[in-house]
Image (cartoon, rainbow, N blue to C red; front, side, top):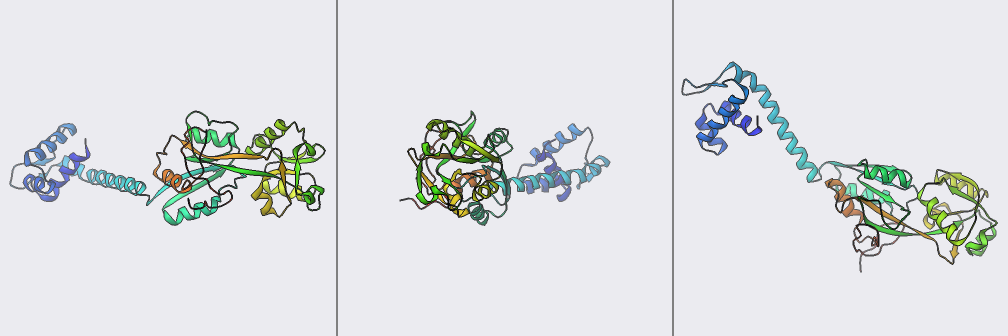
Length: 316
């Protein structure tokens, strides 16, 4: 049973004859009669009494009538829903992010996106990189800001943009390093550290940096929330590597690291070169306007460099 056949059945009921129904459906009468006959054959019963000039519903036809109306209404609602989502009058997009994201002002970006597409619902989830990657690959997330621990993303994921974040050392006010304003990593061997729990993007970046420079850090406390990490550093329990924007927002001394200057890469990733979800595709376009180049990450596409910590500047 096809929607087209039900539409033809309802046209005959509404117009009162096969001739008028064919005219309203803009098809020849023989085609409409064949369509209704095929429907009757599938259902195993006559739907109309064809004895007079005006057709009359049989008992089977009367039984089908409310169901046909409901099915046609459902089909119309389905078409409207798809059209609304495709036109972004409605829809939903799920975004994952590392907790320490600073290179993109996500609240400001989502607020601007909402102004443009007020009917799209956005769901945001923060989690460690491994959980975000798994959720993205499983289809639980449409997009995710990741700080990957590799030159390439896992198979099946593509990077739509990439940002470089500068890492600085934050200290308690009055710390000797705060007065100096800069330091070498090799000079931090005697410093106690506050760190994120193992497995987070920031912890991975800092651990790799320390290993590269031969720094054996003494971790006095590890946490899962950035706010607590900042408060512990402020209290003098230890120092910590964080993105510069986090230290500046906290009002803590930001000590610049020399030789090497530490940083990490954050990427906006998704499944495939273009998200299938229209709302997700629109959000990608919004977030990657003049966005930085993904570089060697899978799915990279050249773009202009952007400014960390806020909305991106105009190109040129």
